[in-house]
Length: 195
Image 1 (cartoon, rainbow, N blue to C red):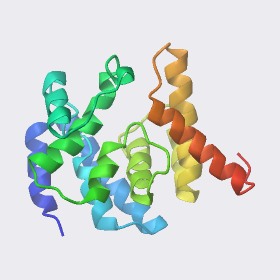
Image 2 (image 1 turned 90 degrees about the vertical axis):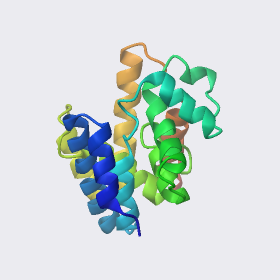
Image 3 (image 1 turned 90 degrees about the horizontal axis):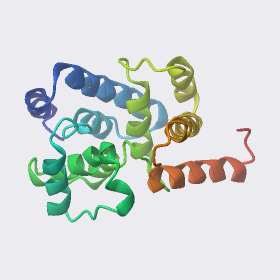
């Protein structure tokens, strides 16, 4: 479907060795999660490769790609440039790489913040980014165990972790992250599942 060998060459030229290895680990995790939960494995792998393509780019260049792609930078996002790379990454993939697969672009676009009503592929890439082999934050092993059982369980855990961490450091929390958390929580309550 896509020339992933070419995409790998492209990210190798754009990213530090550490970020390149992370991207390859996310791609492998995304493919494994896609296989387990019934998402498209090739799309998951491709999105994993490309998810951080703009992560190490200068902020003003990230903003330029976002604007060229028609993204509007919300007021909350101005002081939080760490989320720019997901929007700029999707824009770069569309504008420079000719990526026209809306599923892959959306998985890249929301891999950091999440959002309400995430698709299966979006959940796969979001979770893969949290559990990739190179990750070593506290509770990563628990997160991996949850991801082996349920994407929603893993996402709920990661969202609680992210929100708690950001609040503990007096950092703003992206509205998409809050809405994603509420959406996953509502799904648990609707299905009468233990949280």
